[in-house]
Image (cartoon, rainbow, N blue to C red; front, side, top):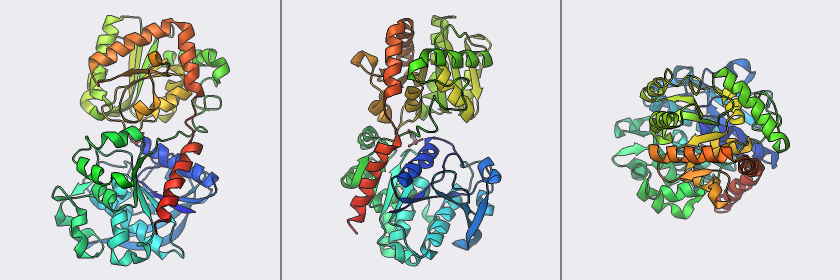
Length: 473
Ligand code: GLC
């Protein structure tokens, strides 16, 4: 089966969040299962782009109304990722360091989508299925159905995978003329709350909709930033498929980013060595439990709760615990977290920024990982932490609910119901007691390390949905 994944991110080419990890791993496993899988993404000015070899396979022009952008398609030549990777190079719009956050993001991602389809229809054969990811690719299913120039793709099944329904890519109808000519009888399909809403359009037009966990699918029926009723309407073609993790990249036995590799058999010694190294780097106390946070410092992830929770937990348990934060996002949260540094030296530290290598070391060297998310469509960090024998402390929501069960119910972690300072601190207290019960702690760590979250199994679920929509042609 020829499968195209179209996405704004893909690890290790360009990563902002978990979307990149999924699009960097799922295609590899789909390929291994005997399919022809290609990933298409914009060509940003990233390290991976600059350090690898590329071949030009196509040239064209995208028109957004009266704007005209030359583009080219580049293919990665070494096949080192385990799937074919194509970059859409539109120098005027994407030759920049960041993935998102520019004033012309609408123009950027719309041009990307148009260039991608222009290239795809010019190929000899059409794909068997096109899997779009998030709102940056949400207009593709619409254009495939209704744009005159893409009539060859009308019968090609498309699927949209929702990694985060909070971001929807809305823009006004004043930009309608950007879209390639289409049958105006269908203009209403573009509308949601008086705007063109890219995510809503993708949901309406795709042949199937997937979310990245079953619980998230249940939750967005009541909480989806204005799209609740739409999700209810398309329930018949929706399914929640829990993400996997790339167990080759995330393997404590082989991970080159760790100080010491380990398996479930020598997990105590292995974790101790990594913890000692981490504590040395961040001036922490290796004899005390280490609670870490890794991720984007946003309200959605409960980042705004961290400064207060850290302050309370540290002051109530003075010199009894360590807290380490790795992340970036909202500047107010970053500053608030840094403001605690002076008072809790030796037990608290932060690294404001993105650092993939350090993240690996933190999973290995920590005792607990905090994830107090308000919204978590799947969450990968809890799965990485389980695999590295670190006990996740999560709020019961979305994919966290599907992957972490409280140790009081014979599970693999610590769970709380509210995204609140009180609940986080209470869970930290439970963590301290667990840490002091060495036998129990070891048992929970072992359960976590033995859980199978590999993509092999999950990849079959994706293939089943593709087959189902292909059979509806
Ligand atoms: C987004 C979601 C996260 C999910 C990831 C991969 O980043 O916020 O919960 O794990 O996408 O699907």
